[in-house]
Image (cartoon, rainbow, N blue to C red; front, top):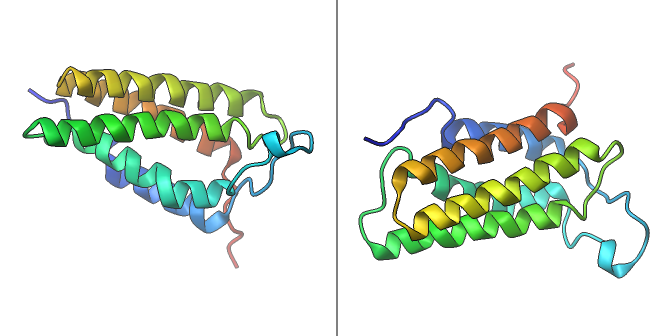
Length: 150
């Protein structure tokens, strides 16, 4: 039986939406240089890549892929999340220790999800999806800047 959780893609999308609206961590605090400059700000990375890729992984908790093609999509999206975690490591905010920890955990848990998808193991993809969610949530708790209420 597939594990279901309240921490599904709907919750992540809401959190990511808040992040997008707030526009957190727009610039890197790393030393100047082409190799350290992010291609896009975190907000754009979330909107264009992280949310769609994570939604594919999170969806497995509710319904396993039906065929090899669907499993391949989940695997590719999980690997994409790992790559995005590497991009996040180039977008260091002040007090970056926790950022590095959460980004590294995103890379590791996304790689686990990709390996589980390759093995067509929905329970392990779901477990890795929960770990991905925890990485995102942990980072958002520390770095998400919500707009002031008027």
